[in-house]
Length: 241
Image (cartoon, rainbow, N blue to C red; front, side, top):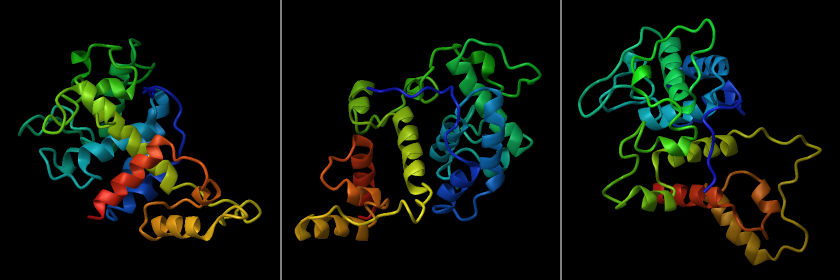
């Protein structure tokens, strides 16, 4: 199983992060995405992936669980079973606390010079115990999978349904759905020459249902979908039911 590091340079823009969430939650506060994009490079944490963690934790920043929007707690820090968890005075403080908590799991290093500790649970973390997003199951999220569906963490991993895997899947959806349109000289959304009509009709049906969105899949009609793309198609199909 490929793993995705918590540390690293973010690969997308704040505007694309905002665009992704606003499709689901039009009232989303763009300052949150901008804060992730600005604060995470100070720690070397993937802010775009941390943002997707918050999407997962807050139900697209619509909440509905223990944590309330005014807490600026975008990752459920300290929130368990009816306990509301930590509160932070500003959006930037809440984002910083989340980034610091990820930093604690991913590294053994001290905070970067000049950075004040905001995360109230930083010292409770087994430092460096989860350098990859997939390692957070059973640590950040306990147990990190749905016990009603899976009998073990290993079984959930095989199904791609653990806490960290779900965050990565959200990120891949964001990348796909907010990809900039190719320039007119590069854009060719048509099928390759000599593609049989029955194949075109079948794939067009998937576009009509919203199961596929990017025109590149027409050009790759003879190629197998990667696993993450299959998962996206299946998820979109089940959400239509």
